[in-house]
Length: 243
Ligand code: F6R
Image 1: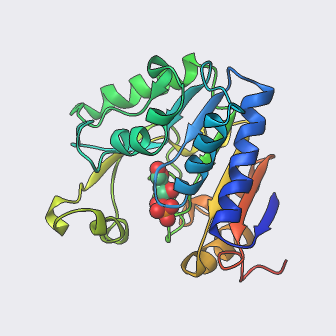
Image 2: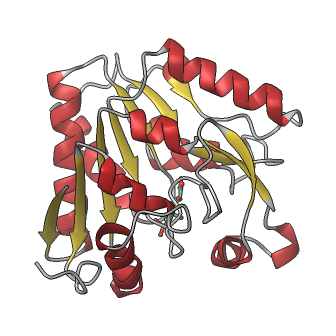
């Protein structure tokens, strides 16, 4: 596990974008596993800037996103489809046919999870998986549980995740209660994993996830077992680590 400490959020975003750029330059037809949430927004901004300068070409890249709320359609401004397009895909030359997210409007969970797992298999798995880290140690929407869920599955979001997401919705009742998420096996099968963490409020979970016991009660702790994980975090998020 490589840990890169950065000065602040902007520095974290630039360094994370550098790692993604290297992947795209070295393998132009790579599969990027992507995340939503506030942490990677600066990373996407930086990648767009370099794309606009002519330094990056996404025309052969395939993307598979981690997760999507169940019940939100693509046009809902809180859907992850909408987030990814407004924050990244609409500003680069990725082929829309190569963009993949779980379909939040598919009511049949078994069908949708099987479809998404088939897509990930058919593109040959993920070369580089970008992850944020939830305050309870979730990755994607793999919430703390008694066991690791392996493939794409439909989750009931925990109260803490619903509360954390409430800031984006008109009321608590509007926050979706379920989501589709890639499973732990899929995340762990990525060739490389890049975790971005920022802010003092992540310091305790960073310490617990990356130095504590490996347990499904802290899903991100399993990343300790992956052979190629890079954590890029600002000083505040890494402040409880002895580095
Ligand atoms: C997003 C996702 C989540 C977030 C996590 C951290 O696709 O899967 O696991 O990465 O909730 O979110 P932020 O970055 O907003 O702190």
